[in-house]
Image (tube, rainbow, N blue to C red; front, side):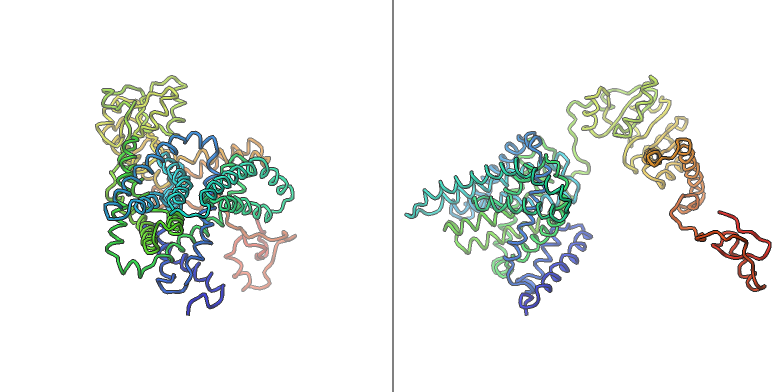
Length: 626
């Protein structure tokens, strides 16, 4: 019996259990959470175990997850930031949509589809899944990186493209004599009115509203207001015949410079995460396995062909716009699928009579399969990606081109740590030579007047060319443990008389560097954390002399512990740490020393010693404070 015929609570439990079991398993396998949600939805859906019969109902509810996701994205996109990304949004994004749309339309026509149907099928596939791509970017930590921002810009253009595409579908619909021409213009007017009204409300009414609610100091009302903003904006756009997600994104952008931005994001985040996972499960439930199995060679072949052609278009546009080979491959793998807006476009085309119901079902299944294949494509990308990302050497001079560097001190790595470390040397007038293997960092340093040469310090020939042989000291300031250890080992072996000072990642890394013979090592967070805690003590009213004494005591204990660990293991000297261990003590001090009443009591109390909490001692012994 299907779950729908039972308790509503059972359905909730089944949904949560499927996600809780599938997602950690798929992430452990390196396949990502998106594929886990899709697999869970397929397993419990009408074409799997049949625990749910109406996948469409769940999918409609779960679309709110995409809506809230785009609202959160909008909160991150201040108007000024959007203006700076205008070339990427309307240049790179539009180029990708046009090129991929042309390729896929030609592919569809070559497969025997009518030109109009081929165009609709192609444009639905061109609109990548915002939910999947953003989730993958978030999991990889690439959302705020330059390549991540380029993908976000393209996704924004694709989300905007659904509006003219729906208008094109309306104009391509078969002619009728019911005044459709008038209704189209009315629809356009209503859509414009919805956009203008949303902008006006977001800009002039929401901030005063949130100020009033904040003064009421009712947290649950603020959460309700945040949900009201998101759902209200989505509903307004839906009434205007536009995308709900577009409305939520516009509201987020309008509120991105509000003082309540972070509060809104915190309130929406829990709902966004749960509903977005539910959306992916709904997509998995919607996959019609009977349809796919009945004609699987054609559907699978079509999906792979569409993904390949779209990936080719994405890669070509990326390379033409001067992205590296690795970045272009990554963009192609992550954006080669169709997206959730394709469901909207295909449904509108079927309703308008442009696409037959059977063709709509096949196209929808193809989109879902492409979404399921995306995490696998990203997983397989590791075998075709270049070992190291290509770097733009424009305006960057390598160590070899400089024909040897000269400096009293060689600094390897000029990131945050190296930049600060160089200041004391420069203040003393000491001549330094700088090498770095990140070209973006080199160009950024050049803006502040630093001459940094490109070079990989883990290579012995680069160390020689950098002047390590005649340097008075070598400072290793790179941020990767393995690279630091490699450089220290090379330098101490090749230049044993040159002092080598290194940045250590943690205590175990510091021990490894000492074994390699480094002359001085410093854990990258030790002194900053000590300064931070000393400032906290000052804020709590501790006198400066005591603050300095405490800091020195911690340094001494840390050094002693490190020496013990060099001779023993990582757990040696743990008793030197100031810990949160509870030391038993009496609630009130006894007014006189305790006495044992017999020999057996005296013998039992003897091992407890002076520190026993409130314990009695044989006569003549006095309790001593810790």
